[in-house]
Image 1 (cartoon, rainbow, N blue to C red):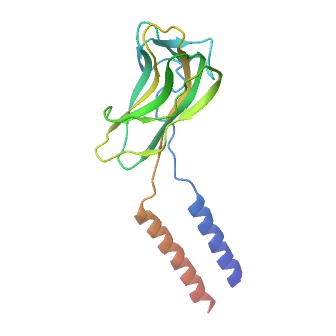
Image 2: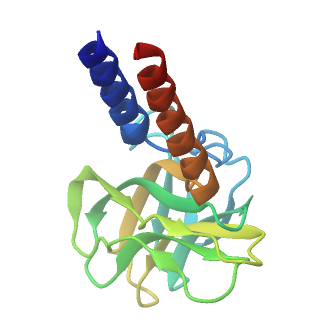
Image 3: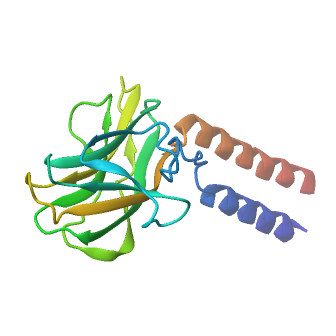
Length: 195
């Protein structure tokens, strides 16, 4: 019986420790660019139905009159919580430009960026930023899907779809201490009752 209780305690502890932090749902409005609601688009950009990863349409950026095409949303954040942005990118023509996903705390400062798409790729490819903790004082994040290239370069075009901006709670040390104390207490109680 003692071995059974100890084995059960070890299995429960391992299960609790290995559980991932609770991640929230996608925080973006209209992540599939279905209606454009919540998005501000800048430069050479629009929404198209012919090329899409899923849903009814995707976001399309190209460079001709402007040097960039961009889709942005501002999302409320909480300091101490980790965030990351992601999405799918595709390009039939990307000769002198590059495309990526980024976010900035309070819309200023150094952007947290994904890897960059720098060559044409007719297959959808997933890109995401690193998981980054919102610093003290951060109240918003400006999430952007960006194409940047020299002006008058019509051969640069990129499609974005299935965007995401997710939060992941970082476990507090006090919560972990409380969990550990409870497990030690259960083990001690079990030892005491078995005598």
